[in-house]
Amino acid sequence: ETLTAYQDNDYARVFAKEFFYFNKQAILLTNVDEHGNSFSAYLPMLKDKKTGELKRATALKLVPTKITYNEQDFTQFKISFSENPTDETLAGFTSTGIQEFVTQLQEKDSALVIHTEEAQYWYDTDQESIIKQLPDAPPQALGCGSIQLKSNVKKAKKATKNAEAQEAYLEISVELTPDYQKDYEIIPFHKDPTKNQPAIAAFMAKYISKPFVYLENVVGVEINFNKVFYKPETLRAVTDILSDIQHLDEQLHRLEKELSL
Image (cartoon, rainbow, N blue to C red; front, top):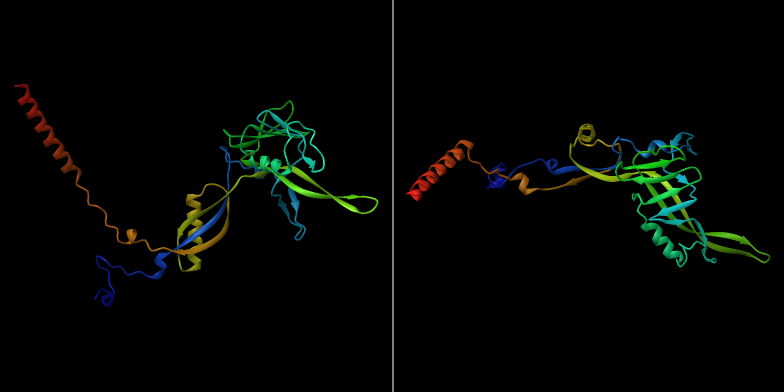
């Protein structure tokens, strides 16, 4: 009978199918420091080889002279497999061990300091910013970002009298990048494309305060029975509750008088 009537009642609801659709909009957030700054402002401008347009690089590559971590200094950044490291702090590490160690270094740990010929760099957890320290100058906050340490195995061709031999080596590199974070938002869906995209943009403007770029948008479907059939509990009026409290107070006063006798 309910199906034939095709009307709302206590246990049935009639909706257009789009009622159950939603936008799952993926975004790439650019995290900022306490002053709203990102390291992206310090990325160099590069010319696109195809279009010729100037675009910001994705990272700033450093040429480290030393890496300090928890009072340990590392000065070898190109380690041949056929040679024994002379740096005592690296002695005993295999190539795999070095790679594992590099990946374990905390990029947002103030104990990690990158030294170059020009300056020192580290991450300040209180300011949520990469700090640049020049000699005889106050520290400069560059904005929220990450210190990326990478270790890659490469092969270098070495010419010999008879043939070309390949020598493998491990190269450790350092890059400074903005701090990006992938996220997504669940937004109501409109079947009219001319309304759906403006609705997404309005939602982002209202709830997202950090810089971001749009990624993929996926339209999903959800049937939430609790939401559709939810019946809010009827709460008692405040005046009735206060009346009960007053009545209980009067009973307590009478009991206290009886006990005092």
